[in-house]
Image (cartoon, rainbow, N blue to C red; front, top):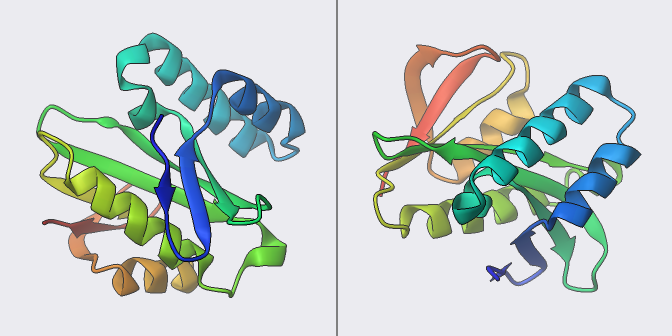
Length: 152
């Protein structure tokens, strides 16, 4: 099992049971749909579970602070990352700490050439997280908004 550790966090791919609990607990229909799609992708590609599953972000004491995900590994070597921190844990640097660790791990994987992300145009906090983690604007806009990229 993959588990990334930082000074304050443990980050690891969720099991099927954990993903089912995430889906059941989610009240936001868009996020519920996203978690279902992640679980379906992980189930369809069990040998690449880590590229489709939600990754749990916990403090070292085991308290959940949020989650992140990769959206599959594309044939061109790109992977897209998404992340979210629970409201009560925002503004403590957890997002940047988790994203930095997950991106460093991803870029060490065979065949991965870059990590991409996109944010809502008005989500300046998420854009600051990406910039802090070494992402640069890609010059394109995706479904959610401006895209960012990080290469090794």
